[in-house]
Image (cartoon, rainbow, N blue to C red; front, side):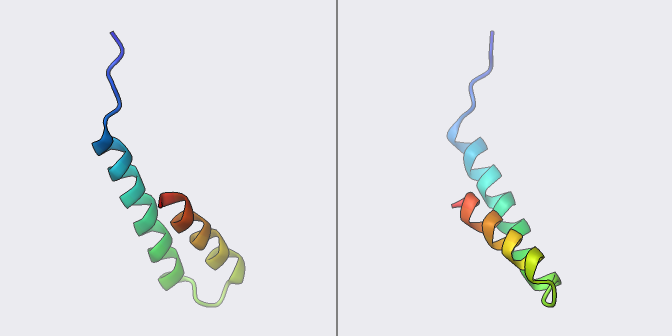
Amino acid sequence: MVPAVGLAHFLTLGAILFTLGVFGIFMNRKNVIIILMSIELILLAV
C-alpha cells in the first residue's frame, strides 16, 4: 500500500523552501546570482 501525501507535507516543503530562500538572500548580499537563485526558491515555495 502506498502512503498518501497530505496537505501537511506540501505546506512543510513550501515553508522549508521559503526559509531557505530568505536565508540565502540575507547571507549573500554581494553575489547577484545566489540572490536570484534564492528569489527563485521563494517563488517556487509559494
